[in-house]
Image (cartoon, rainbow, N blue to C red; front, side):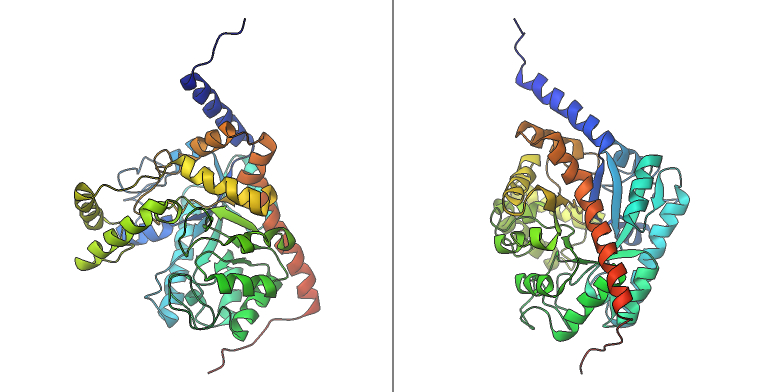
Length: 402
């Protein structure tokens, strides 16, 4: 007779199985804001934030925890705040790109630059973490398709069309609608991204912009860090009708871990906590020591609703049901959020999510698609579209209408 397995033993077995799966099919994470955190905390002084060592006092991310989390590829966000505009935004984006280059050069045994799907596979074979880049917000190109192409030449492989505010050619999810989605120039941005092989990232954009971009794009799109609107009613999340279009498009929606986007109870709490920061003269996205001290004091009087790995799994279950298992992925948004779910506290936590999904009956095949294969495939498909389009037409020199 087989001995009974306790709940704790079963959970431990699932965690062991999760780690074994990630050793073979590591996580491709769609969005990590480490470069911006390094800018804000130490102005890119990597001696002060040596990520070869434990940086858990300051950051969600360092190499030991990336290894513990089973991360095999990371899209490093080269985000700059939308409060920077024009050439200032472009210059700051270039500094972010340079910061990623410094990280890759400083840690060559662990990080390797990746520009293509083949590069991602080669990095996995070599045991290193493929390092890609994504620019977060159309303000980073200052309404210039030439700047867009220059960022691609420097290695940026996706552009999030907006951040928290509208740009001159696209509406954001968290701003008052101005364009009704994409303008004609916005559609030209999408077409040019298709031509050069830069992924169109629809996180942060309004649902109208999502739909317009899907109409305009000949290549698969991504959501680098967004979850399901049907599970948590926040405008940063993806409506079901958009999720339902991903199979025809070939795109991938990468579920985020940010509690205020995934847990309904956290939405109202976060709005109040953000207002508390603003009342003290701080930006609501600030994660520095002063901001976190204010958050802790606020939380002492009003306990924070806590998301868990199960919360994220609820989103992934729904996204799989609506979009299909071939069209989902993971985009944690580490170092871009003040709070993280219990069990997914930092980049070491991915095995806990995989273990949760194993407990829900997800197969190894499905989990390998979620963690690795889907993201690699979407970049490869975008490369194939770019090869075709670049033979059909040359660079666009369209300009934004005055």
